[in-house]
Length: 152
Image: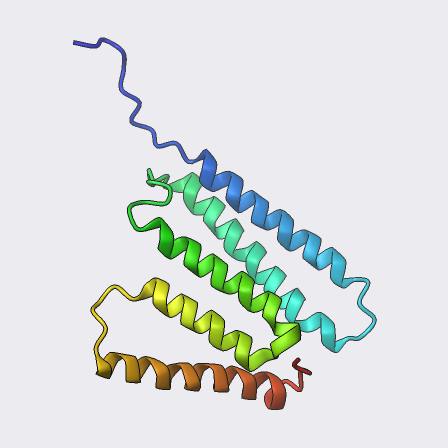
């Protein structure tokens, strides 16, 4: 028998460090928006930065009040994570060349393939294609017409 005490306190340093990193990223983003000359271009980055800071502070407080032992990435297929990140990066790189709609379709398709765990059928493919058109078209309409954001 091992006589060393068992550590029952979960290690939450990783969660705290990531949350603190996001607070810092939000603060840097807020600071960066001070140099923007156009008032309209400040709104979205500031809102996103404030939301990021608030969510990270809530995460820190909850982690300190009730630490939960997490399993990091947990179980799952690594290729799904890689596909999601790759699809997002590829969409960002394609946006200046191919435009918002095409690059958003690439991101949507990559995320869909990464998230799809069930067997593909003709019906699910149809539903996902239609929902992709609705989601991408909805975001395009929102940014282009609702928010008057010039899109590539």
